[in-house]
Length: 416
Image 1 (cartoon, rainbow, N blue to C red):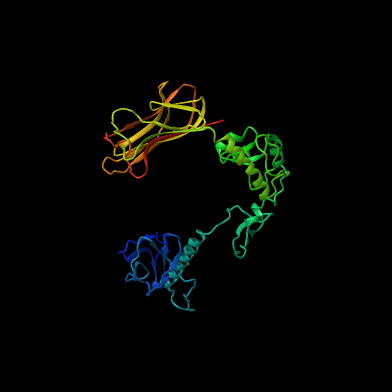
Image 2: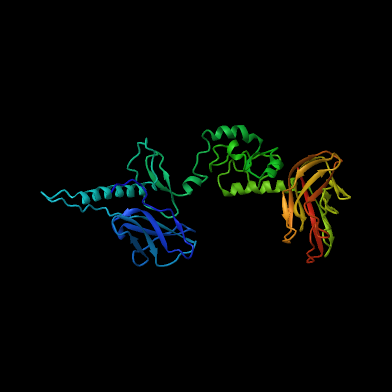
């Protein structure tokens, strides 16, 4: 026969708890030339099944032929079955001197050679290889070592085992060499280098060279676990220690304690929370479709006097605010809230699309989130629109569990 196909392995057959017969398309000469692998989907672990014990092979009456395997057990969808060729790496055709040319056995030997090369190619296709133009060869893997990983040596000529401490130890790097020193020279005069959230950066960046999680890569491209050389003379806090640079965990801890102290005085005095509070077992109210409805806001926590609340509207001091709000709804189908500047009749923030099916009884919230800039004497309110009218409980269903019921809620955090 000719060998016109390179297929010597099936795609995975996923178990269904019933099927036990699985076909393969390439031709073999014996049942032993098939290998069956059982794979656990959750972790990829494999078990090679045993012929006769775990499965049988059915071939055609004329060999070589394609065929099928039949497993002894059924397998659920947690398992997959893969069938692949398993041709022996032997050559058993013998030519006797003076014998008639054995065309059939000769062609079989040629076919087996091709199939064996395909089998080896399938193995190579799953290996990690250098590019064809690479000059690397004879690269040997080191013996496995506990809790270590592979990396190239300093000369990039061999793979070696390495532990995390070799890369991440802050005492193991030279911080005085460029490009580090160049960046420090530009930034250290304004204060220490810290990692911070965006809000923390706003609170501290007047005295601090700040790297936020989103800016670290661009502002500090060599950020790789090296030491951060720090100027220890910021104006907005005093650390509990004054080392020349952060050489160990205690130095870093000292500065973080100072940062925490600064944030406690900078960030906590600039927020207000308003909400809809009702007596125990009182529902949120009717939600009528057809137009935006103003949500009730009747209670405020404004210790720092940055807002006023009246007639469901909040008026903020001028400034920039981080905002998050929640507008619940119940059995109104699709709904969406918005934060509306009533004074100027413009929408400041749109809430997230939400749905509380009129038949399924599952409440949901349209969440409003973002940053706004407001001028003084601008009245703001939460407005809400829905698809289907729900009487009494459209704005939320009472829990009757605590001492009060709380529905719509909004928090404003003012930048300093």
